[in-house]
Length: 73
Length: 384
Image 1 (cartoon, rainbow over the protein chains, first blue to last red):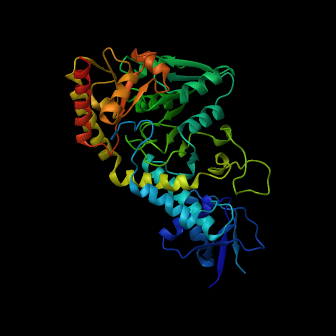
Image 2: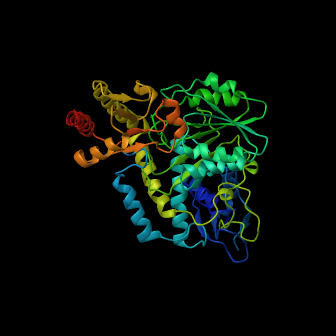
Image 3: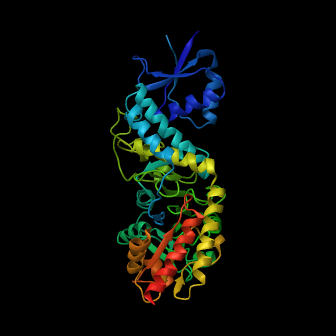
């Protein structure tokens, strides 16, 4: 499976993103931020890469601030 | 022992509050959102869940608009000092607690004009009288939702409507009502809601928060504190987003774990059902006291106009004499005096003597109310 990660400005948004995605049955997980990507709260959300647009619009609707979606190499 | 000082802080708490705090200390313990490891995430999750539970309770659509503070006083200070600038005018009532009056008197010296609308002797407020005080420079209205002295409910929904019509911010001090009386920030038209965790939300002391409504531009609200938030660590400027902008420094995470359990307890019981129980009890207490001629009762007679806090005085006895006799002879713990609200006492005509205050909670029983009425009767009998 190809994964991506979403970065957030703070842990509040990371936790909200995790909860709202799981409520929709999406298989996401909070993981430590990969070294080559920077972030502040230390965690990011790992998502199935193919679900990125679904998740992006869901999180926008749930007022989750994001700092970018990256392909996880 | 009968504990009738719930308006100061509720006791006992639901057992799950202590259990949640012990679990936090035993199994989580880390600094929320600072490190990214498992325990740090778990700690942050507790705080997230608390924000969500409180959002449900107050009908806040976006939980990031709830920021945690130490208590209602800190929330009120944040809202007032953060929002008002010299030249602004603010309207309040004569029934306010010093948590509102003292910051306002301080701001008055800094060039903020203040109008205090007189309330009636039972503590009630006529919204039309309040509206008369609105001026072109008025920026905000601040009211308590219910008086900590008389239990009188103020008409926040009517005032909320006035605030909307006049494009004013409406700040409500819900220290006495959050968890005990329904609050819907949208229907009530509340822009800023200051609440405490340790009263009718049954959390521990040192927890509270401020709801910052969608009408409030957060860039206009200056934080009380600046500092580390675990976010935007590469910048030396305060984050400009919620909730981090107003939550600098390590929070009282163990306290918030307890507050979460308290808020969930309230949601499970239902605010309406808590309200019904407390209303029935306060009605019985008022009925019991009404028959005793030496007692003067304060606040509205009708339970629909009040919460379960009752102030009274007994002829020829000072409030502190009554309180110490009740404690020594009957094991009833209550509060005598001015209850940090001199302006409210001037309104109801009990300044500087004060009153004896009985304040109930969801854990108060019918038997305790009956015993307390009997105790007061005995006390009067002895004094005759």
